[in-house]
Image 1 (cartoon, one colour):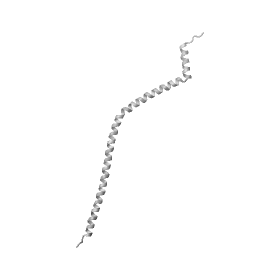
Image 2: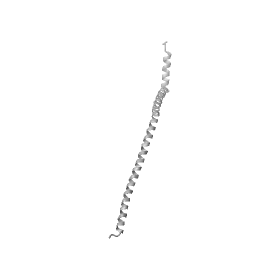
Image 3: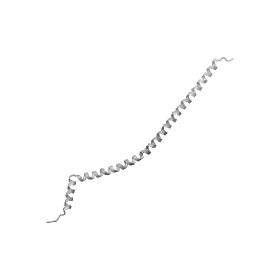
Image 4: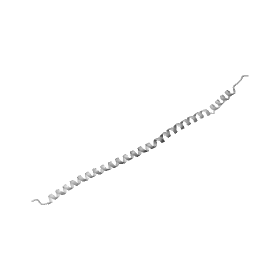
Length: 106
């Protein structure tokens, strides 16, 4: 009678069982999922560390945008006032001209 190593036979049957029930594939997929979770956690931690810098940059950009908006608004008001001044000069010249035509010239 041949002597068989029961440990090897048990291991072989276990491997056949795992392959037959696809538990080995599930185990590999589970390990892959755990690795993905670990990598995602590391990425998430790096992103969380970047948040305060991003918030500070956002506030700085927002402040510059508000200042630029105020400057554009002031420039628009200045342009409107220049137009108004030009028309005021035209109106005053017309008033002087009308007065010149109304007054008698001797």
